Amino acid sequence: MRTIKTALLSYGLSGRVFHAPFVHAHGGYVLVGAWERSKEQIGKDYPGTKTFRTLDEILSDPGIELVIVNTPTHTHYDFTREVLLAGKHALVEKAFTTNAAEAVELNRLAKQKGKVLSVYHNRRWDSDFLVVQQVLSEGLLGDVVEVQIAYDRFNDVLSPKAHREVPGPGAGNLMDLGPHLVDQALVWFGMPDAVFADLRACRTGSKVDDYFELLLYYQGLRVRLRSSYLVREPGPGYILHGTKGTFFKSRSDIQETQLKKGMLPTDAFYGIEPPASHGTLFKTGIDREDPIESPRGNYLGYFDLLHLAIVTGSPVPVSAEEGVLVMRVLDAAAESNRVGKVISL
Image (cartoon, rainbow, N blue to C red):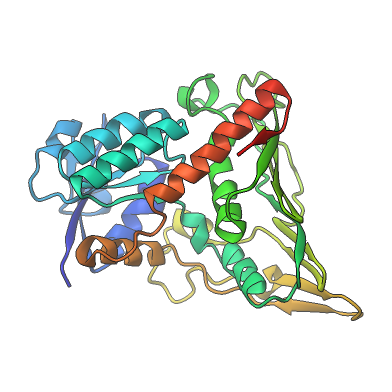
């Protein structure tokens, strides 16, 4: 198997939990190191790796083929542009960019340079997402007429990180968790006809949105996306209603929790939900509840497909084109909230 030498542009939570474990565990990659501004942690976690002190050190290394841009959202456009201009492939964390125009330009540049550009919408490999996709693909609900996708949590403390709490491009919950929810809706139902959005700052002292609700309009279908930082007891992460029944599913993928505890993605019990977290199907005309077992969550699947895309030219997992569409919906949502109107797409 050909290996791809890979470097990270930061080694905080994102680098430690969502990227380095998979690059290290996958036989198709070699984790070279990370850009660390002050610490030298990656070498302690992964002996033999290197701490880079500047971006130029990474870009000038001829052996590095893939760069993971996992810095704050407002830096994604500039850093990814530099990575592509240096002739390297790029994996970009969500949100892809701060607006659709930036995403379009990066997609154009990647094509011009002949490089792979992918957006890390890893939640497509959550057990939650996978079981809902199974229910939809098997037609268990008939014609789906109403869907709610929620990503709630309780965190009333403002982050010490300025890029999260100071108003500006890329700040706020719409740009933090919104990309995941929008991406999932687009995978299942395609681009909506129109968008209406309501954004609020609910935490004491908050200057950025920490609550959002988006309504996506489709022919014969409405999809509601919502997220709040002030939900002590969240309800189902997914609620789907159709002509043949209803499906409830909690947001209970356990990969993030397992990774934070140090579990490896190659461990036997990695990504497997407990039975108590399985979704429930309510069939029309049948007085019973049917549990639906979730497939195993596995972010390593994303890295499998990315490796194939770089080595063989196969389709890119979460392409830049798909990233552009997500940003178009997020742009429309921000505009809808600003003017208080439905925005056509």
